[in-house]
Length: 179
Image (cartoon, rainbow, N blue to C red; front, side):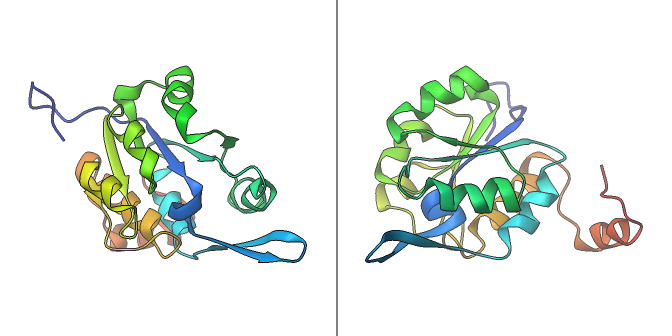
């Protein structure tokens, strides 16, 4: 996406809605209530490629399942996470970051409200149809099945240095990520 000047925006922040994007959006219930969410294996690797270039922050509006999300995002993946209603996300982003420097990835009906305010937006393949119509990029992968990893590679290719698995493998073999 280029502005009126033809320049690419200076993207610094990647804000990700967890439920339906980082996980499948399915909630598994027992008689005790919501107990499980399904997260995919590749998204953490994709985020590791991008975390040296952008601030990565996760948001969830799921109060009852927040501890499950916190276990995966904060404890296991070591990314910041906040409980933020979809209706409050634009104000939350404005409070923490600049909208014109932010990418938002979401999947729901109301994520369109955020898509219209940020510099760039991404939706997974299984996002609500209106969200997919309003976003800048739709992944081929579904939420919880590599959509975030795909988004990370897309952002690298579009706004930073193109993704090169061979360069990354060489750098990882030396114990350091390329800058």
